[in-house]
Image 1 (tube, helix red, strand yellow):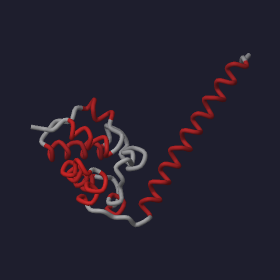
Image 2 (cartoon, rainbow, N blue to C red):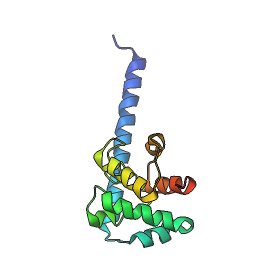
Image 3 (tube, one colour):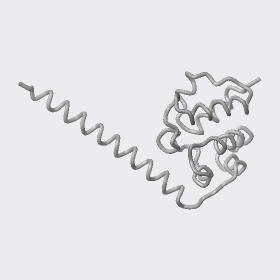
Image 4 (tube, rainbow, N blue to C red):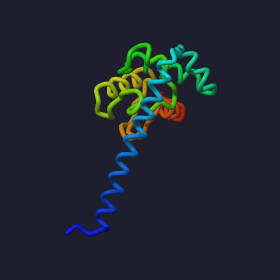
Length: 138
């Protein structure tokens, strides 16, 4: 026989999963809506607009992103720094081919090694730019 406490626990877990999925769907729809606005910016515009103190790093990261992103060219040019790599920008996880290509391209561009443990914590382009600004290569 199932105890009432278990029923409540299972119901709570189901609601939590449903809310998480709903929020992820809403964030994805918001990102698509931003892309649909037709807003385009160059890597230099992206850097100046969002990273006044770190424009050189931001511009280089954005250029690498544009070259390796698993998005159409039009979608990739409308990316915002706080769009999440997995949820909004279609990078699956640290092991996906697109993510590996992006990290390898960043390592080549910045002539540095990006530790896998650090890259596992990265969620947005802003996180990558912040990491590279705090940990400059040779």
